Amino acid sequence: MTLDVAFTHRFADRGFDIRFSAPTPGTTVLFGRSGSGKSTVVAAVAGLLRPSGACRIALDGATMADSAAGVFLPPERRRVGMVFQDARLFPHMSVATNLRYGLRRARAAPQTSPIRFDDVVELLGIRNLLDRKPRTLSGGERQRVAIGRALLAQPRLLAMDEPLASLDAQRKAEILPYLARLGPALRLPILYVTHALDEVARLADTLVLIRAGKVLASGTLSDVAARGDLPLAERDDAGAVLPARVAAHDRTRRLTTLRAAGRDFLAPLLDVPEGGAVRLRIPAREVVLATAAPPSISIHNVIAGTVRAVTDDPHRHAANVEIALDGAAMLARVTPDAVARLGLAPGAPVLALVKSVALEVLA
Image (tube, rainbow, N blue to C red; front, side, top):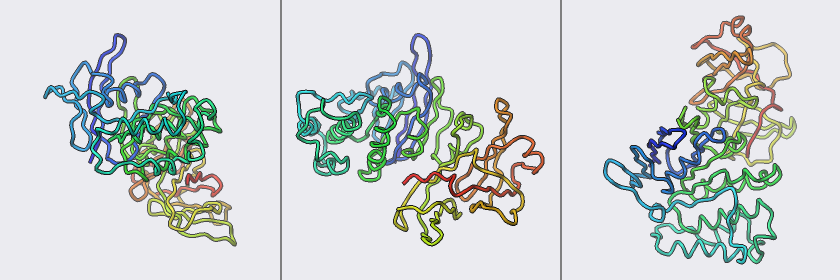
C-alpha cells in the first residue's frame, strides 16, 4: 500500500519534476524552504492542479491521475481532505455545525470504515467547543475544528498544507500532540507540508525533501534525518530521530531506559508507561565521538556503531559523520581534525557519546 506521486509541471518562471513513493497508512511530510514546491505537490495530489507534463498519481493502487492513460479525476472524486493555514470555518455556524458540514459532504462516499463524529471529537479534544462560534476560538482550536471537519468528510487521504504556520509557539505546542495521534488512531494516510523541523520530528514517518521543484531525497524519517549529505545536516538543529520504546524506569537513579535501533539509551526519568512508544531526537552537535570508552565520565550513553559516511561541511569548517546502528543511524557534527585524528572512515568502528540531558524525547 503506497502513495505514488510522479509528475512534471511548468509555471512561467520555474519547472517541477517530482517523484516519490511513500508507504500507507502513515504520515508523509514534504519538507523544504518556502517556495520550494511543497504546496504544488499537494495541489497536484488533490486535483487542484493539472500538471502540464507527464503525470501519474495513485493511492493504494487506485489511480487518481495518469496522463498516459488519459485519467484525471476531479477533486471531489479523489476524496482528499484538505486543511490549510487558515481554518476556513463558516463564521455563522457553531463548531458542531461546521463539523457536521463535513458529514454532509461525505454522504456519497463509500462507508467501508467510517470516521465517526464522536471519535473525531474525542481524538481532537474539542467536545467542550461544540456550542461555540469560530470567532471565540484560539488559532489552535480553530485548526483542530478544521481538521475534524476534513476528517468527517471521510477522506481517503488527509492533506495538510502548513496548518501551523500562522500559529505562535504556544499554540503550535498545543496542537502538535493532537496531530501526532491522527495517523496511528485512524490508520489514515496523511500528506503534511511544513518548513519547521520540530513538526518533522514529531509527525513524519516518511520524509520527502524538496528543493527548487525537485525531490532531493525521500525515505523513512530515521534514515533521511541522519544523512550528512543533505540540506538538513546544514542546519543548527540537525540530528537523528529514532523510534524508541520505554524499556524500564529506575526511579532511584531518576533515569529511563529507551530501546532504539538495537541500543539502550538512558534519558532523564519519563512519565511514560513501560512499553510506550516515543521518538528519540539526538542533536548532531551533542554527539561526541571516540574510538575507546573513557574510563570515568558523566555521560551515560556510550553507543557502539560503525561509520557509514563522512561528509565535509566547508561552510562550518566541520564534518558530518553518519553512524550506522541496527536499521537506523545517528549523526555527529565534529571538526575535520577530529575525523583525521580518530581515523574515521566508512566501515570503521566508533563510539558515540551522548549526555542523557541532551536527548530530546518526543512522547
